[in-house]
Structure formats: structure tokens, C-alpha cells
Length: 271
Figure 1: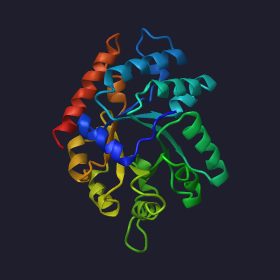
Figure 2: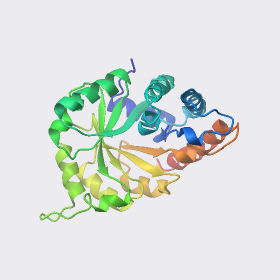
Figure 3: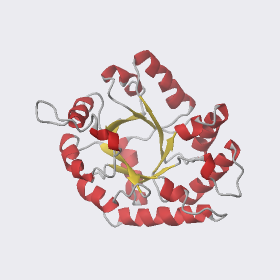
Figure 4: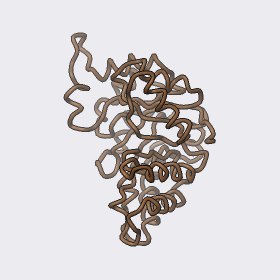
């Protein structure tokens, strides 16, 4: 069973490794280098090589479950095997974006916290407290709530002004922050939303932020750090495609390491 990582232990890993880099193992079977067969087994082999070359450069791995679920039952097994390959001192995130009422949430808790044995799961908070509580009741694990996403559709609801003068995402973050604590709750904030990060930090100064969108989505690390870094770092900065597909040949893992090292140095210089 994967060892629980407390907030203090995660901060310790960040400080000793001098990085808050999170690598997204969002592996698309159709984008594997040409010398791989397009099979779930090849996805595991690809992931293993990426992990072996990068585990010392990051503190976390995030797996978007859709890329595995799309492969059916074999994909779920591929997901489990990949997680087992990740070192125990790494913070493992299931990027599943679940969000449903209590009795359904209980089943997701078993699937992700017991069967997959991840450290954290991403959730949508928009069905309210009772859809999140079952995850918080599982001691030693984390939830990562969608705070402010970087997609165009974020303007449809998240950025809508309320009658009290606040934006909807601000109200959601402030309210949901009361459900857990900085020791078991994080928030997703897109890397392209740096203009809002200082406002978010005023609401949740001590919570960790998971920041996707570095690399292929052109998020700027320097801007993220200058707007969202907390005294305890408080960030997991995620890059996926720019690392996974840095190379398309047999040296793909070495190329992935080179890109991960480049990002690590950018973060390290800002601490």
C-alpha cells in the first residue's frame, strides 16, 4: 500500500529535491514512439522509462485517467501497474475530475484510494459538500478541487460575477476551503490564469495549488511562481505533453529527462 504523504512530508520532498515539478503521465497510446506497438503493455513500458528517467527531478506524478479508461479493462490494469512503478516518496494524483453525490462518491473512494491507492484525486466541487465529504473522511488522502481552469469554457460559469461583487470561482474556493484543510485539500488553478492567482492566494494562503498548463499549453513558470508561491512553496506545477513527447525516437526517455530538467531548473532558480 502506498505510504501516505502529509503536507509536511510533501514540503520536505520539495525542499530536498529543490523542485515542485509534477509530471503528467497522460499517455496517449496513439502518440507512442513508432518503435512501440499500440498496446496497453507498451503504455506501461513507455511510462516505466519516463519514470526511471525523471523521478529524481519531480515530486509528483499526475495520471489523467481518461487516457487509461479509454483502453477498457486493460487500461485500468495499465493504470494500476504504472502507479506501482512510481517511487513511494512521489505524490501520485489521479486526475479523474469526479463529482457526484455521497453514495456514488463512496464507490469512487474505494476505486481510487483503495484499488489504485493514489495519494490524491481531482474533484469538481460544484455538487457541494456532500459530494466531497466521503473523500475527506478517508484519512491520509487528499482531494484536489477544481478552482479556476484555463479552458475557454471557464468564462461560462467560473468567471461569472455575483451580486456580492465577487466572481463565482472565488465564492466556490472560499466556501469549499472550509470543508477540509490545507493538510488534505488542494486546488487546480490553470497556469494561464496568473492574473487571478494573487486573488486566490488571498482566499487560500496556505493551500497547495496544482497548476497544469506548463509546456504545451504555454503557461509561464516565472509568472506562476511570482503570483502564487507561498512561504511553504504551496505549488505543484504540472507539465505533461512537453515532457512525454519531447522525443519520438528510441531516445524518447532521455529527451523527456532533458525537458524535465529544463523545467526543474526554472523552478529551482525561483525559490
